[in-house]
Amino acid sequence: MAAEKYKDISWKNYKSLPKEEKMEAFWYFMRKGTRPKHELEYDEKELTEEGKKAEDEKQLKRRMDLKRRLKEEKKKKEEKSKEKKIKL
Image 1 (cartoon, rainbow, N blue to C red):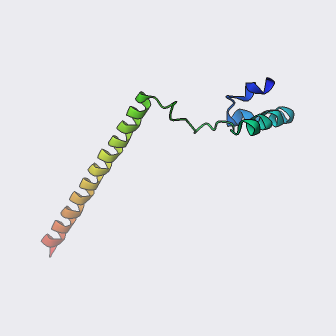
Image 2 (cartoon, rainbow, N blue to C red):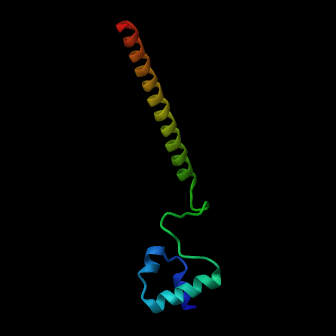
Image 3 (tube, one colour):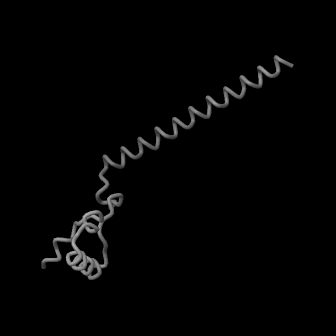
């Protein structure tokens, strides 16, 4: 079937199709019950172990950075409170 060429079309490419082809693609997706893939979407099957590992590392790095910043802020507050006590 000629409509099979729309199987892996992206949303951006779908939007740029001529009107007649866009209608053909639209009906292809209606029959299949799917839609064009958005650039930000991904299936869990497509997310490899390396991708999962990289995401875990990013989250860990963010958490460590947040903890570090919180500790620094706490130290600054303590130093300010000590300075105020000394002034009084």
